[in-house]
Amino acid sequence: MAKRTFDILLSLAGLIVFSPILIGVWLLVLFTLGRPVLYSPERTGKSNSRITVRKFRSMRIAEGPTSHHSGDDDPRVTGVGRFIRKFKFDELPQLWNVLRGDMSFVGPRPETPEYTKLYTEEQLQILELRPGITDFASIEFADLGSLLKGDDPDKIYFEQVWDRKMDLRMKYVRERSFWVDIKLLYRTFAAVFVRS
Image (cartoon, rainbow, N blue to C red; front, side):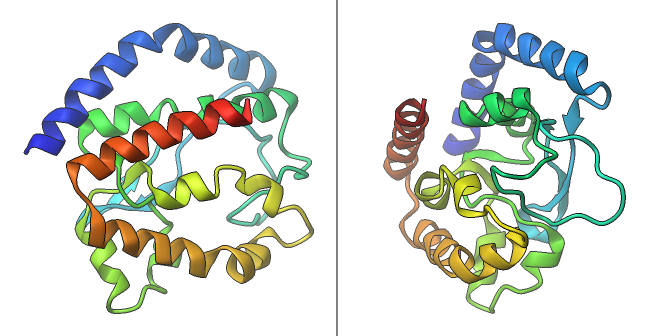
């Protein structure tokens, strides 16, 4: 209950404080990419539910099948898209997900239903928690796009990122607490600041 109250209060404050940035990015994406302004993928939420995660769109709409992941060299990413990704502005609409209760500020990042089917019996504990905007893995892989450069970003993700991410998600499952959440929020803001 305390975590949920914290999420509600902080997401409301965030939506108010960041409203000028939200409006500015909305207009940038609208004028450079057109509609839809938001990218709204389906992800797996708490208790294996389906949630729609909101992000500002940073890529041109592709025709035909695409990979789940994209590297910094993906030609679909626009100049504006690179800018908003660098400062994590594309993630700001998830404040609405937090306010709704689909997500928390801190918790394992939500995966696609296709990927959560790959979880082991132990890893299914991750789905007992509300997914978050940030966690240990988000901080360690804050510059994930630079790692996924190449012709097959999904293959790179599974070969170089997947196992480590799952270890870090389980680390959060085991160590989660209010103070861990505060520490992760601080480290997330610090990581964004350092990258900028």
